[in-house]
Amino acid sequence: MGVRLGHAIYREGMEQDLRRGSWVWAALAVVRRPSLWPTALRQLARSSRPRWWRRPPFLPVPDRAYVRFRLETQYGTHGAPAPRDLVTYLEWCRSERQNTTGARAARR
Image 1 (cartoon, rainbow, N blue to C red):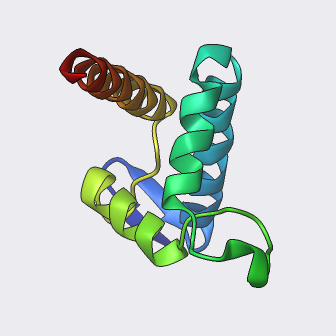
Image 2 (cartoon, one colour; image 1 turned 180 degrees about the horizontal axis):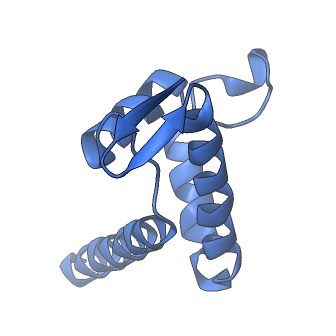
């Protein structure tokens, strides 16, 4: 049995598949832009759980509750990340870092 959301009917568990697929497309969008790699790694490190190396899966990944909260506030309950949104966010992070770094250098 499915649930009607907008014009589409979703099976139970399909939401998870859609989100997982969206993350794949979002990651590919970043992989295609090497200039964003340092920014993406920096943001991944900033959003990772403290002492991530001490708990499985032993990867620097953000806390699930944090990711769920961010996705729900951006896309709603059943939303999934749009690849372009991730690229735009990383570009914004990069420009903010450049602005902050430039402002610090100008004050010296």
